[in-house]
Image 1 (cartoon, rainbow, N blue to C red):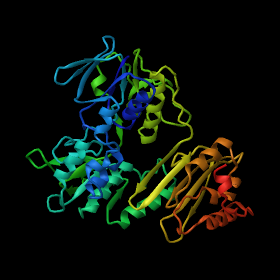
Image 2: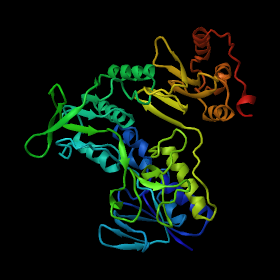
Image 3: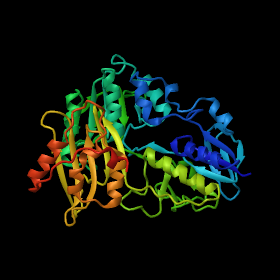
Length: 446
């Protein structure tokens, strides 16, 4: 019976532990200094907004771990000794392992801004960040204004959180339009509108120069690069992306890039040490995916794959077709396959439809020479993952996707449907005569 040690109790590490237990009697220890128990990181914003308590974000009861013989240790790891197969904690205590899984997640990016380490300056990733925000911005009397630096999913989440407590927010985005490296122009513009409609002071094409000290080690304002404009604030949120949490491995014998370098079996350069989740970096990118994928579902899939390998059934990490979902304040977003933002490849064409009055739109990407369906983004319309995964796998043509689009709709009953309007606009734009086909449950579950 091997001792499997997992550093990190996020979705990747916990998924690995659960599946190792299902398939073996190995001794399993999960280590985390962040929290005693696994919690849903994506739900932190709803704790601050008052929709739930922190204990509600825990998917498993506290007794689950003991019942399933998964040992939990609350501690911070200081160093890993790969050859000796030991780890050392910040307390000086040492633990041995037979196999080690690194699942240490991410840390918020910092780019050397003057004042970035002042009190009142923080990211939004860990439970401790939530506690710090509760202290720094409990209401609009303590925090009269907050400035968020960096567009993206974490930035807009933080803006919504602060806005829910009526705290004025200035949102600095370096790009000319929100998240336009990822979103096509029409979608990015719609998110700009949504941010502004919620009373958030969105500044596009703007960069931070420095964070100003009040003289006591606390931020009092920020300065904008170029114009020199000073914006007084009590909180600065640094949300300009994340990086793999690997600083404690710098002096180890494990090979690093941006993250922990791994092969398709998620093996590192050191025998019996593996890396999964946000901290793992593929030596060779998989298709159009980035070598580092800081996404919840990919962490879960890596956890499932590594568990099989640990239990004697080597399994490569094969994530399949890209998909993701998020929320931009009140707009739900889904993406399946590849739909490019500002840097669109030459072979990609896009069809875009937007509702005349509501914050609802669809963008479909297809190959300009073959008409093969490449991907879809939806805002304000829920679609079935299984349907698009099937269509992408089958290499469907874009005309077929448009024709059978009603099969993919997953909106609740009594929601207004928009497929007829989408097909009509597609026909006008591409000079087609496609007629939408009625939804068929038989086709959906075939």
